Length: 404
Image 1 (cartoon, rainbow, N blue to C red):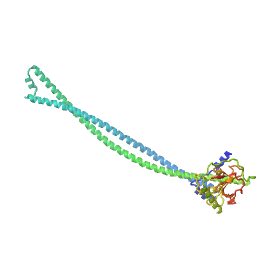
Image 2: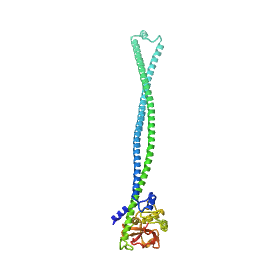
Image 3: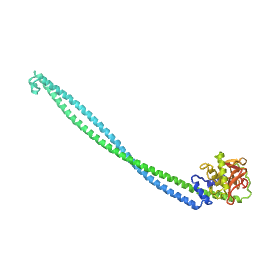
Image 4: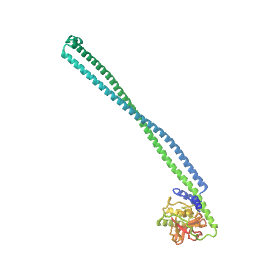
C-alpha cells in the first residue's frame, strides 16, 4: 500500500511557484500540456544552459588571469620586502663603518696630543729638540741613552699614530661612501618595487571587478536556467498528473459496487493545519465565484479561465494567500496525505472532500471544497463543468475530510 502511494506521489507531485502564471495561460487553452509545449520548454532550458556554460567559461578564464596577477603582485611585494631588508643591512654596515672611523679618529687625536706634548717640552728646554742637540747636551752617558730612547719611542709612536690615522680615514671614508651608495640604490629600488606593486594591485583590482561582473551575469543566467528548468519540469509533471487523474476518473466511471462512503481504514494525514478561518472563507468564496461564472472543466487546468478538480482547490487556496511553498499544486491523492484528517461530522466550510473508486488513497480520483450544509463546490467533469452539489452525489466518498 505504501509503495503504491509513494508511486502515485512521485508521478503526481507538482510544485508551483513563480511558474504558475505562465502555465495557467497554457492550461486554460489546452486540456493538458502538449508535446510542443514541453519541447519548447526544453529548448528554452537548453539555451539558458548554453548561455550559463559560456559565462562560466569566461569566468574561469578571468579567474586564471586573476591568479597570474596575484602571483605578480606577490612577487613584487617579496622584492619590496627583500629591498627593505637589504637596505637595513647596508645601513647597519654604514653605522659600523662610521663607528670604526670614530674610534680610529680618537686614536689619532690621542697621538696628536702626545706629539703636542713633545713639542711643548722641546720649546721649554729651548734651542730646539733635535737628535744632535740631545746628544750634545746630555749629562753623561746614561742621560744620553735615556734621551735617545725617548726620541726613538716618540718617533715610533708618532709614525704609528699617523699611519693608523691615515688608514682609518681611508677605511672610514670608503665605508661611508659605500654605505651612501648602497642606500641610494636601495631607495631607488624600493621606489621601483613600490610602483610595480601598485601597478599589480591596480591590475588585480580591475580584474577582480571583471570577475565580479561575470559572476553576477552567471548567477543571473543560472537563476534563469533554474526557472526554465522548473517550467519544463512543471509542464512534464502536470502532464503526468493530468494523465493519472484522468485515468483514475475514467476507471471510477466503470467501477461497480462502489460504496457511498468508504469505511475508515485509519489513513493518516498531517498533524497540523496551515490555514485560518479567514483563509478558508476566502478559498470558499473564490470557488463559489468560479462555479457561478460557469467556468469550463479542463484536465490539468488551475485557472483563471478553466479548472479541473485539484486545480480548483489549488487556485482557491492560492487566491486566499496560501501559496508556494506552503501550498502546492498536487493531485487529489496527495492533497489527502497533505491535509489534517477531519471526521465528516466535523466538517467546516473550506475543508476538502475526497473520492476513491476502491477506498484506497492512491486511487482517489476527485477532490472538492466543502461549502457547508452538506454541499460542496467542485470542478466535476468535462460534461458537467463546475458545480454546487451535494457531497453524496458522487460515490466513493472517503470517510474523512482534509483540513488545509
